[in-house]
Length: 347
Image (cartoon, rainbow, N blue to C red):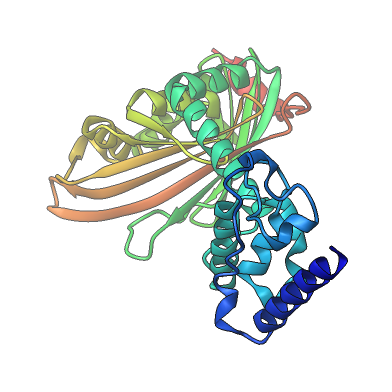
């Protein structure tokens, strides 16, 4: 009996040595199968390796032999693969994944999960933004700004090289609820100051303050401009009314195009001789609003078009952008000169 077992061990070692040398018997390793045994009992003993195929029913049963068949030259390195995937199909999967990873076609599992999470989060944000009403959001932001006790603003005009625009510098202004509004700017190099309250305005162009009622003759256009002036929250509300539709952008911005009639009125209202001018076809304009913490923080207006003076048949090209930034909300102290207050209060 002992001699028989020793003979079988020698035969097994001979087969394994031939497998290590790349022999043709490796691909087969055809071990005799005993049909009399139940399949669940195959490979359940160490001695069974010599005569029975390993079982594929239990985890880890006979897996090491499978790895020998798959790669006989690296038995020791394939033990972990056999324990992780006892089924032959799992071995094929891991081999395919390894080949793809070496070829640069597969991502690490943690990177794939991270990319999936980023894409899913972006999809949720986009859906949430699509459900919002941009016009309602901007309108609510304007109302929030209008309800504040006071605030300051800076308006910066910018003209394109081919635009015919009066050289006007930035406007610095202050306003308070149910009180005074005061702002100053430069026009053609001259300093201008304006104060208003309750529909009454006063302006200082050179040395003294004058009320809007005192501006006659060639300066009537200044009086009209003063009467049409609106603080930023009211001007932005008028701009919102003439926008066709608003589109939400990243960073809390909302953009919309003006209607044709709205662009015409804006171009003419900013002209000194609007009653003698007309707007050529093709004029366009856009508005952009920035909302921060539920309140209007900035808005921008771009106007493009041509104004034709009907009496002189002279055409002016306009392409300008005006940016208004809100600041010091709730902490602004409006300081109006006493002389300006007297002009506003005088009948």
